[in-house]
Amino acid sequence: MASITLEGITKTYTGDVQAVKGVNLQIEDGEFVVLVGPSGCGKSTLLRMVAGLETITDGTLNIGERVVNKLEPAERDIAMVFQNYALYPHMTVYNNLAYGLKNRGFKKGEIDQRVHVAAKMLEIEEFLERKPRKLSGGQRQRVAMGRALVRDPAAFLFDEPLSNLDAKLRVQMRVEIKQLQRRLKTTSLYVTHDQLEAMTLGDRLVVLNAGQIEQVGTPMEIYARPATMFVAGFIGSPAMNMLPVDYLHTQGANGLLDNLPDGTDIVGIRPDDMHLTPPTAPHLTVDSTLALFEAAGAESHLYVNLADSDQPTVIRVSGQPPVAEGETLQFYVTRDALHPFNSATGQRTPSPGE
Amino acid sequence: MVENRPWANVFAHTVLIIGVALVVFPVYIAIVASTQAPYELLRGTLPLLPGSYGIENYTQMWQSGVSSSNSPPAALMLWNSFVMAMAITVGKLFISLLSAFAIVYFRFRFRIFFFWLIFVTLMLPVEVRIIPTFQVVANLNMLNSFAGLSIPLIASATATFLFRQFFMTIPEEMLEAARVDGAGPMKFFKDILMPLSVTNIAALFVIMFIYGWNQYLWPLLITTDPDYTTIVMGIQRMTSEENPQWHLVMAAVVMAALPPVLVILFMQRLFVKGLTETEK
Image (cartoon, rainbow over all chains, first blue to last red; front, top):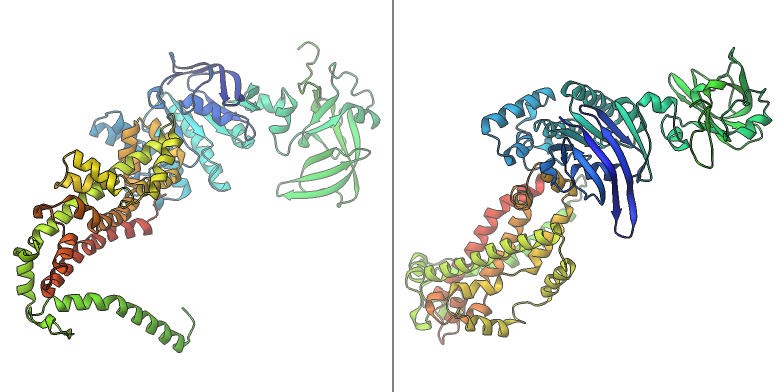
């Protein structure tokens, strides 16, 4: 168990390509932190630098009390779960789990005991004598987790461990990983590109873009108050709609937009915050045409064309839409659903008093 | 096959049977010839049925050889061939595994250059470099020795190249997982790379063994001592006599053909197993 501290961590590849640009991050002991971002944002590189699989160009990395910049992965007391599981195909599940312990010179009895404890925890005891190829994807994933578990390391590192599983299994494993981490209280760093996975798993999220941290916070903080337009668009599905303030003025703002923070020229509105029936609070009213309707069971997504604008907009409503495709509809937005941004800086504009 | 065309079937079988017969017939003749009395084969017509001198011919060849042509007993020649072939095979596998490992997994200066250097030597078969190699071996006093027979043939660009290609198909994550698991480079090589390469090793073992076993020119050049005569050389010597004793030559030929067959039979299980249970 240990905290992990990143100070100014930078990765520069030959040819001056900066994959990670001076990341500062403090991960508390026992915390579950998720690195999330689009592909190519440097999240995997960052994780691999923590693991010791990539060299750190600049900055300081602490695991626990130690500076581990120059240490081999094995000396950092971390365990890693890989995307393709990376199980040793010629070894039985038992030996896959035991290999790391053997290399560290554990006694046979101790190894045996640890392997069985981990196998029991992950419900893979019956597969211990099988080879990985005889296992299903979900079972392989468990073995990969088990290999991390047996070592009882200071930290778990997960590199998109669920992306090779089918959707249903992914949800199931997600829950199990969360429960396991709660139980073991091992510091964990988890990389994913799936914002839903990030939201549901993390105690805290770190949203990365182009090698830099956009925002750090609890999932709900980030969802409720995205600090940048990038975060606003990345977290939440369907993505947040961005409407220019000028446009809203032309639609009859009724003074509702007058108290937006200085510098605000664009507002974000979550698809869930666009109502088809007028709320009692003061609200904006926008005319639009229903272009396409996606039924997703309990909810449906309405892709609408706004009147006098070509801004793509999505509304999420529960149940069926009230009108057919091609017909007009009005939606209503209250003041507190508006996320004010400045489109030049991409930042959220601070409200007075912030 | 769901198709039901009897004539196509008959035709296919006929072609295959003729093909097999063409391959098997010489082998059959060799076996038949090796069981004849000494005079049978000198009469000009080749008998097509086995004779009754089999045990006698084989025993004589195995124990005493053909002294007139300076051919030692087949037992000794087979042993020499076996030692040479094994040394070449094991040496080639060992060195090419290690060099492929170095080229794929280590970052060092001139890595690509060394790879190309190895690759280019593919174009130089033994025969091309035989004179300079002979010079070197002679200067090192390795004439008439197993070292001289095998060492110059050990370096193998082909095997290195094949292992390199195979190692490159092993996912990078396997190495990373091993590093996290605390395996150093040699441990990774021994515990993970070698077991994964078993199929390739078995296949190359067969190829290399036959290559070593069939060496003719090189042993002929560097050994003069009958104690180091290999079976292939022995057969050549026996046939270049004025009156070759064909019954004994054929016995030697049959014996010479056996070890490669045994190696294939033995190794086949390994690589057929490897091929059917794809481990990746």
